[in-house]
Length: 181
Image (cartoon, rainbow, N blue to C red; front, side):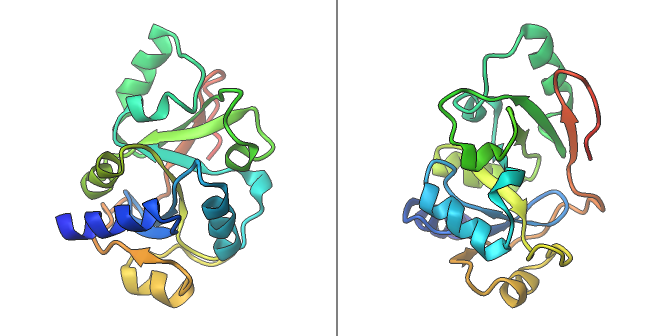
């Protein structure tokens, strides 16, 4: 597994778009601070930038450069669901690029419970983008061969097993508590 993670990190550092297993499906990711990589990811997926992207991490510390400081109460609420398949919409820092947030004043963030993907974030040294590995309108890939079939432009596919969840991550708005997905 370490070799796979090393290859994925090399690809991320070179501006690549990778695919990796998550709690439910394969995700597409890249360095969220590399605008060219994010734009290429959106082009591969055929997803409009206006929708925004999820950013995942191994722990909350890797997400702090994306979100406004949170209260102790909010942090406690986040910690009851993380690591896990809950994505939270949090107020975004003013220096976070709009290509990550889309047309929103929040950013979607998650601390992944997928062991291999958490290791990937640790080895990369930060958070990565996360959107389902599929072209817009098609079913998300649950296996590496499905990623290769649907998205041959992906630079590296980190083989591994999805964690078995039947549903994509739930998305909740942190300030209102509203369930968005």
